[in-house]
View 1 (cartoon, one colour):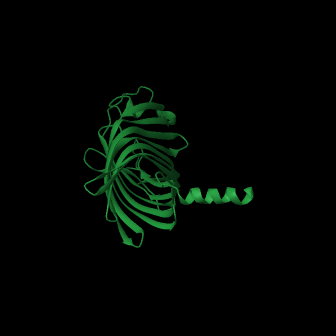
View 2 (cartoon, helix red, strand yellow; view 1 turned 45 degrees about the vertical axis):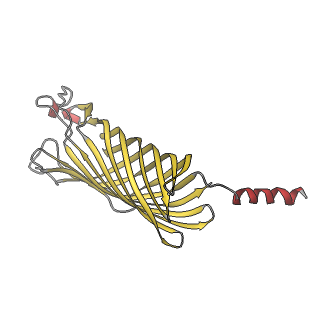
View 3 (cartoon, helix red, strand yellow; view 1 turned 120 degrees about the vertical axis):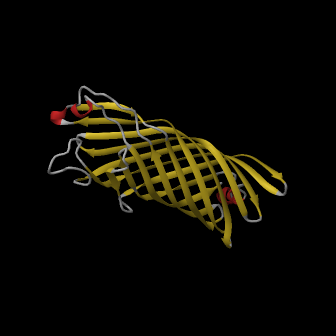
Length: 283
């Protein structure tokens, strides 16, 4: 009797789930395109990758805080926590810090860079639901980390906290399938770049540069395909643009190229594409 009753109660509890919370887990892959330029807008170096050169995982959890009816619309507030980690190689093209006849400038120097990327966010999200359509706005804080190993002697770490605002909408396109559009803006807080460079006869560089104004825009198209009650396949294509303005100038007596006029991290831009695929569990 108990062997029959307990599974029946479990099944009944799953079917009666309110689906207040959402858990999303999946994989991601990216096209990366990074360019540094001097004050005359001349290219200094680039990092590029093909799809699947950079890959990783991501996760998102939304916890329902409150729900109400306003003007015939269902208004729901969520606390959203999400993060992603990716790693892989990019193709580097650049030049030597001290040009030579054999390598006078970009793109005479070519190599492979190993990268790691980490993003963490916490957001407060307001969702409005009406007639199979939803709109949302959210605001929150996040942290971005990028490890860039150009070679065994040179490593750079870009990191910053950021403030973020987002807005988006979804609509039903076929049965319960939905597609949407998300817009996001991020402003970095105290962005830095830590440089660790063993320059051989030129000496060593171990300094932290204070980056200039750094901001990011993202445009994404999410897709949701329900598989069964409380379980969906999800996918998203996202374009990301990041601008990093020139850093302060550092005089470093331990590194010859920076010992007189100093060194700085130049202006740079990222124009990246990210692709996500996973499952969403509503519970």
